[in-house]
Image (cartoon, rainbow, N blue to C red; front, side):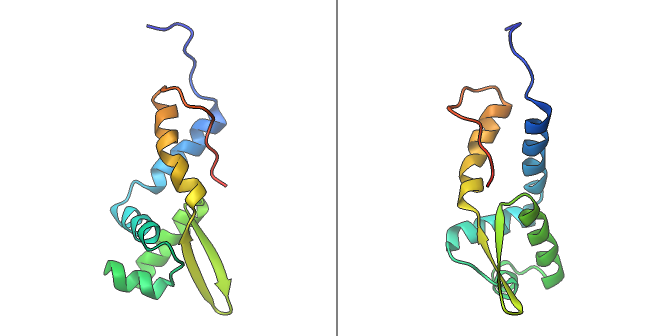
Length: 111
């Protein structure tokens, strides 16, 4: 056992925990996957149609995903368009490596 090993900084651990918590739901994973594969902004209605989940449920999950910045919201008049945050999603696998103690070049930050 490596006695020099230290736990993650508390703030960093809390950030990663919020990411994992946000993805701890099958519907949210479906939404992230849909937006990542579509690669263009979508309305709630388009996400509802593609996912087969109700409007209020999709809106609830988009709010959670936006809070951790996996999803970005663009306002257009009275409509909102949702798109994947490439910076955040691309650093998620690195976050898992950091949590597991694997060496990584830099600490990922979700911007």
